[in-house]
Image (cartoon, rainbow, N blue to C red; front, side, top):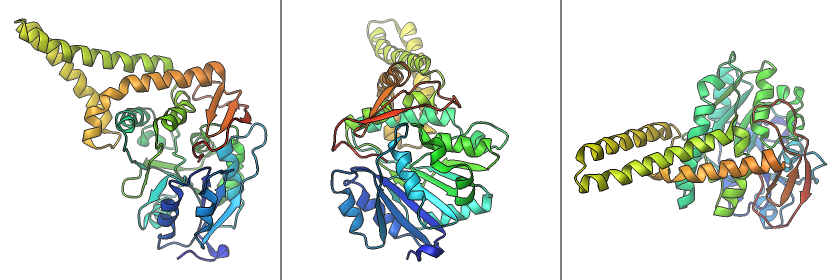
Length: 364
C-alpha cells in the first residue's frame, strides 16, 4: 500500500498524453508494488482522450494537469518538471505510461540503487513486440544501442559514456534538484540520455542495465507512431547516422544477395562458387545474429530481424533529414523546430514548439 505523502520513499511521476490504451495497466502494476513506501503522480500533458479520466479513477493516484510548455521546452520534460515538484521523497521514479511493472520491482530497484551507492539508476525495459514492424525493427535498433552504449562503459565512473532510458529512470531527489532536474535538459529531445550525462559529468554515479523481470513496455502500437517516434530521436543517438545507415543497408544487401544467389548457382552446377557464396552469406548472417542476440529479444524476432535492416536504414536517414537538415520534428501533436547538432554535442538545442493537431498518439 502506498504511504502518506509526507513519508513516501519514492515519488513516482508518470507523464501521459493521450495514453488511454496503456495507462490503466501501468497504474495497476504500480499500485500493486510492495516493500517500499511510494506516492504516484500522473501528469496529464494536455490529453484529449480518456487518459485523465482513467487516471482519476484510481483513488490512490494523484493527477495534475501540466501547463503548456514554454517556448524552447520539450513537452515531456515540461510535464516531468511539474510532476517532480510534488511531495518530498528520497527517490523520484520517472516512468512512462506504456510501462508495466513486475511485482516487487520498485523495492528491488531502490535496494539496488542504494546497495550500489548510485544516484541515478535506469532500466531498459523488456520490449513487447506484437506487429511485424516491431518484431523486425526493434531488435536492430536495440542491438545498435547496446553496441554504442554498453552497460559496462556507462556504469564505469572513469568512462564518459552515459545513457539512460526514460521509460524507467530512478534518481535521488537531492542531487537531481541540485543539478536543476529536468529543467536543465528541458530543451533536449533525448532528455533521459542528457540527464544521465549531466549526472555523470557532475561526479554522480549512474547505473544502467537491462530490466529483465522488472519492467516491460510496448513503445508504439501502430506503424504511424513507430515511424514518428523513432524519427524524432534515432539520428540523435548515433555519431554518424548516415554512415551507419549505409553500412546496415549494405549488410542486408550482401546477406540477401549471397543467400539468394547461392542456391541458383548450385542448381546450374557451379557447386564450388555456389558453396563459397553460401558460406559467405551464412557467415554474414551469423555475425548479424550474434550482434542482434545481445538486444534481449526472442529468437524468433532475432531470426527475422534481418528484414529490419533496410527499415532501420530508412528510419535513420529520415530522422537525420528531419533533425539534422530541417531541424524540425513532429511528435504527438507537437512540432519542435530549431533542432540540430551531433548526437554527442553538449551544446543545448534551442527549440520552438507549436501544436499541429489534437488527438495524436500519447507523449511520454
